Amino acid sequence: MKNKLPVVDFSRLAGDSPPGTCVVCLGGFAASDEVRQLGNCRHVFHRACIDRWIDADGFTCPLCRSPLLPSPEEEEEKRLIVKIFTTIRSFPLSIMNLQINLFISNLYVENYL
Ligand SMILES: [Zn+2]
Ligand SMILES: [Zn+2]
Image (cartoon, rainbow, N blue to C red; front, side, top):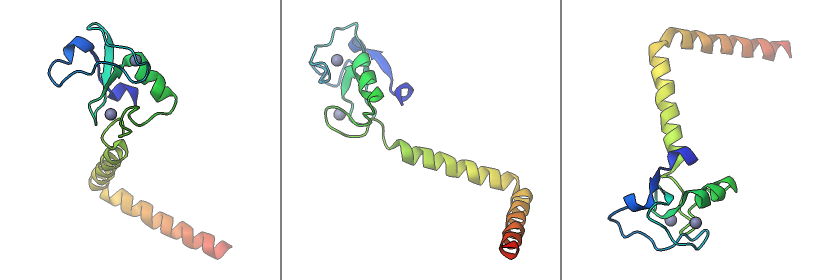
């Protein structure tokens, strides 16, 4: 989770109205502070603060409660489905054999029991 959230210097967050304080520690940001910006809501926290928050099983933004990243489960699911289809397409015969084998062993188990 943590390595998906970019770490940047606070001074690099030029542009989109940088926040005055980190709601985790209620401290201000210095230009040289390492901060993480959340992928979904763009809220910004000290790196150490949000790391501690994530370690305590915080998977939502401490400020607005939106997920830290744009639905990681969905992305993972899509990635898996693509992987499965790619595998099936490259080994069509072995997959079919596998299913036939499974079918046969199921039959065997049913008869045996
Ligand atoms: Zn902080
Ligand atoms: Zn937020």
